[in-house]
Length: 79
Image (cartoon, rainbow, N blue to C red; front, top):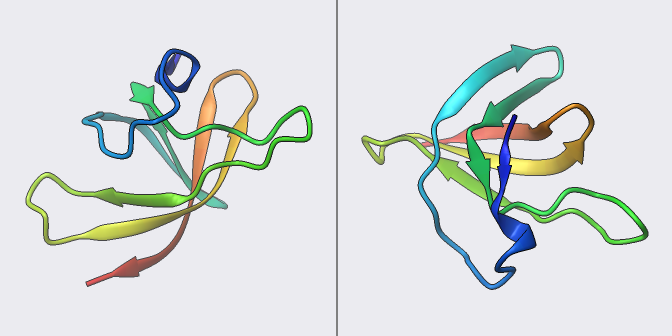
């Protein structure tokens, strides 16, 4: 289950996390920890980007949804 870091500090704009699961339909990932706030209670979800450790690949986070864990929906890959 994703550690929900956004509950403790909503001002963080960069953090380290590990991809625990990658799903393809629709493209989304589950991180071990996140500062991305999911949609809920009238509050819109956060957006941003995920960057690979090598720094060469970036994916847009276009939706964040909490169900059994927190899912980060991915947009197009940026080079």
